Image 1 (cartoon, rainbow, N blue to C red):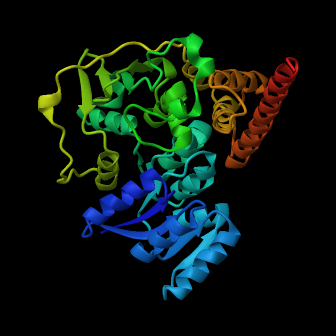
Image 2 (tube, rainbow, N blue to C red):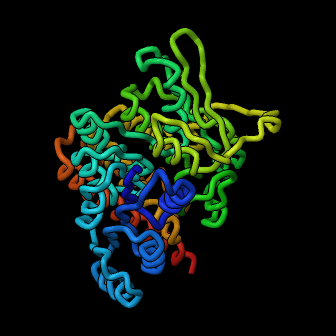
Length: 398
């Protein structure tokens, strides 16, 4: 019986993980959950799964959740809150496996502490490796515990690498759907609406990651994540656009052989793989091989999608640059979603923040969080500047 904690239990990955555990009750037990701000969802999960401890973002919500559970007669569940609550979930002494699925840098500290506590971690939070990958992977090596990728692309690479040693790898190929604007002219980008950007052609995801997929920043984050997970330089991690999203990733070996992994586009499959590794167990998720008739591939357009270029540049620089990349993107995407900036202004804002960020190695999680806060301040200043410019431009015609 594998005992599991989920960081981000009410998000899409968290819910999919609970679905997998429910399908294999003889293999998995839920011990601890960390939710966000959705009290209703957290209450239903606590009532259904009866974890030893559940964490929620805000203290007032923790009080409300605790009260509702008492009224339900489920008072034995410990309710905690905030970053310290997430760490409590991640380091629970009864937990064997931690699924890290909190979106953004909010999941960084809990993920790092889970690794320090000697837990096996399934990573769906790419921002942790983007911001603090050197620290997390070094600690995992020290603990001699694997970091198992749940992102479909890195999970696919992990599976392909079972066919050869890492020193036999020539390069990794990460596939990208191209998002909803693959065939949209760059001249149209200033007119793109939030609704259009949230209409991903393949995957159903959260709002930030969907926008990141539309700008290809998500693929840039995955390049950085692959460099950290598989200890490869950025030049040996390539992105190729594959609109069908059938092949999730490929590994090219030094002799010219290429192994590709394809499967149904269902996140439960990489979750199951990570939870049961190194085993493979029976599932009902089948890919209809008869449908494998037409596969398209093309290189990404870095001029039209500059976020991917910025990610490669940050990956080469390392240190504070990758922290700033993630922080600035999070601020820029939020500003776009609320209508403060245009779609085409997202990469411009990020590049401005990167230009103002000094490169340098970060020696601790505290330094990472300090660099993150600084980059967010710079990004917010850029958003304010853009808004004032737009207001001035609008009033000049009155």
